[in-house]
Image (cartoon, rainbow, N blue to C red; front, side, top):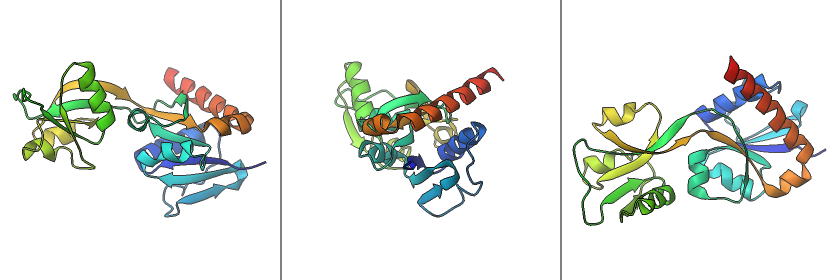
Length: 212
């Protein structure tokens, strides 16, 4: 039986997802997150893990080098990859929001929006009937309005502390985000039994946690 290959993002999502799998009865080594290896095999569970950047997880799954993956809904909305979304894991909750300097109005002529999420941001403002110029940045999005690069930003908000520390406020919430279990369509057919078992065990664990 071939190994089930799982692409996981490094960091907080990984820690919460690994804990969820352990609660579901999977025997994962405790040092999994401490390893500097990018590929970790867990032969006792017939699983292999790839540790990747969050934005790359859906790409690995789409191309079939990973059977399944764990990705934030923000990544799935932005990347629009050809994968199946099987389960909301209810972990790492946050949301996408529009933020900016307090008490400032949008420029009437093509206001500028800085973001790591150009696809999501474009769709949001288009649905509102607002024409904006999207500026794609890869990090430190909060800097953009402070130095005059943009009128607003679209970014992930968890506690709002980073916005507050930089003197910014939220103007609108776009969409709530949690981490999702995704699967490659071909793997879903070829390894349906193993994947369905994983989904079933995780679902039971999530439901148990919800009633505690």
